Image (cartoon, rainbow over all chains, first blue to last red):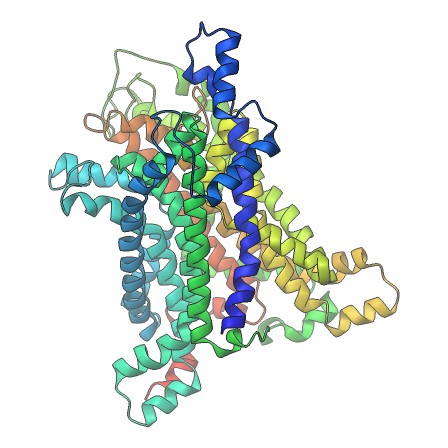
Length: 308
Length: 323
């Protein structure tokens, strides 16, 4: 198990480094922040002084070296816009997104397991067809449009839910639903497919013939074998959740990391952008490792490095 | 191809019939599935709208009429062009929908085709040769996939101006790994098969083997992946346009129309609702067609399509198992 994890960490460290380097370079290409933060009448001397103060006059690789050494000392630089430490801005926004994403993923997985198993239990029953149609539609729903429709119906027409903000449980309903819809749709299809295969396997017959109850057969025997493919997809979907978070946080004014990234790109606030990307990339990196560890726990072939 | 696959074909159409009969079988299979048929009709309709729509409605879609602002839909008072209402500048929503379908498709289709071609050729090459070529390709795929596509697009489109060509390029690059991985996995499995060994023994060059023996077997899978991916690309383009970094006005796209309708949501709901519906209907159709194609292109599963939909699932298997 430890060897497996070590190998896994080594192979995903490279993408992490490349992403950080890539964002560093791309951010520098978005233009000179001096144009944005200095008055139009600024003299060349003032511009040079501004660039020197923030290190923009150095060659790119020197800047990157400085950046790396600072990061190792846990110093993420300070925001150009508000002059506060970038780490503070990111750490303030990150929990908001994490809570939103966590609530969404837990609900999506629980819901998909229940609905998917139910649909797979009797293939082509009414329940199965309703589940198939709903999940197909959910998986191909544009999330921004779903959010706007939610606002239109539940906030504007019925007045049950607030249009934005994070206060109270009611404010969570629409953002979580919006973020939930696509992962839920995809997961239901994956769980259903895997469960149909699992439920028609010989070991299910064995479990039934030794007198195991239906609940135990479905959730104990079949689900355990159907879990690995669903888990893989759930991992990919969690990476994609950041996509959704950008949209959802923009629409609902949620003070999370997606909104922070968009604002810092538009404001050329490199330090904040880099810190935000770094934190997100590390989270995704850690999450992938956790998912692979779960995968290995469920399937001993993966654990022993047997490739098919 | 026909000689290697004949043994795998279902009892229904073995031995392998000629191409004309095979094409007829396709039609028969499609006509038997009502949902797939409907999906094809809708996609053809959207395609036709994109092809000829701008010629017919191009003028109508941009003509402003400040005396007919925010007209509600489903009334024929202002003529059939305003069946779906008018927007806050008095332009026909119906005409704008039709014209915007071209922008939406002309971003999504090239992006899918580029990523399909590049990704599948690269993947087959990597899987065929194994070793360092495979390792490097997989690491590249990991790097691209480990970063959220939308965020990457936001950064890139902010650096280089958000034109349609740049959107296509960003989306294509972001989706190459999907085909790269699928093609690599299949071609790595195929290259150890006997018929590939036989071709090697005769001294066939590796590109010829890939083109003649690997590609025909891998392509059906890749086409299915592509039709599913079409949804993803279309949704991402809409999201980008919605966020204001995709298609820019005065060009129109469905995502951009939703964004414009959002400003007047409380007074004129139809401006945001119809373009969103258009996106949903198109992507759902593509998904339905993809799942049909997945069955139709798999010789071991194709016979299921000859059954009515209600009897299609693994009924035999299930009946055998259930007490």
